[in-house]
Image (cartoon, rainbow, N blue to C red; front, side, top):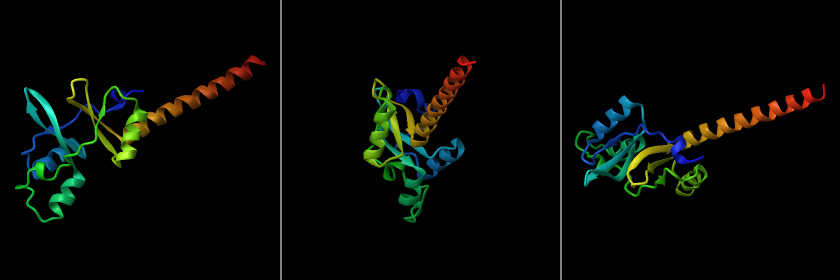
Length: 149
């Protein structure tokens, strides 16, 4: 299974000058915890960083800074760990594990952000596969028992 098969493609991209308050409002309205921060370069978005709800709390609110005055460029994580849409989800899991992150921006073939994959997305996909495997095993046993009748 490839990352593109399970990643969330409804991503929210903001510019680096977006204020922490505006970012928090976008997160609230979209019911998301992560925003990708990108800038346009030759008409294409270039990923600069990610900002999470936790970044806003720890790097803005807890420091007593004004959410209206702080651009997300000051709160975002710049060294972004990414994966590509054509990678296997096992590779994405290894990247998450080795980097200590729960979310990865997903880049498409042109290197532009096209999605976000989370540990929860992986759990859901693998759980569905395990359920399907269990159902297959059950059907196999029923078929076997019926063949003896």
